[in-house]
Length: 234
Image 1: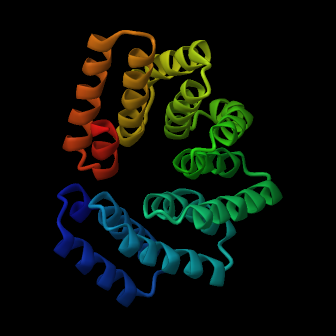
Image 2: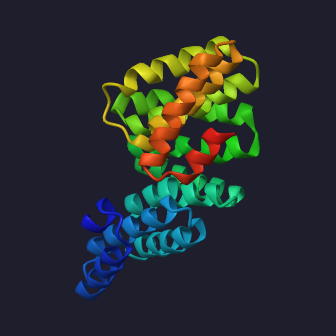
């Protein structure tokens, strides 16, 4: 969408208004989702959540179960976690998982691994490990690369937190190699660089840690990723 690619709020709000006037459910859903991501990327998590809540309710009312669950597992879960509503993020993930398993949909099941994010913010490292290890094979089987790179970053950080340095190195190194040839988002690669910086620091490679941190910071700044920018600064 032009408004999202140009980072222009006025174009996005106009698009939402036009789609609402059109009466086309999926046009409206698409524009609302893009606007919510715009708000979330600007750090306006509560406002992003309001729009994702509307979107999820809209899909539920229309019986669009797949779209409802994907929005729970992706934007709903993401912005709840980033707004500090961690239990709500986990609730969204659990509901999406239930729908995905009932539908037998591998992509939904893979995206439910993203509940590792709120577990990470809670400091529940064993839960991060459990979720990521359980679902990674599904994500790899269908090539859901953004999920693979995100959960590899969070899994690597969790391994570091519990002292499993070799497991952290294995997961992060593999994901970094894969990120060079996969179709994945900058957000996922940014968090992977943050994890790599933490790994290098843990194994006594401060120069490499600084290089990875600088790369993560550049990615965060160029993509306007405020939370990743803050996480890298830590």
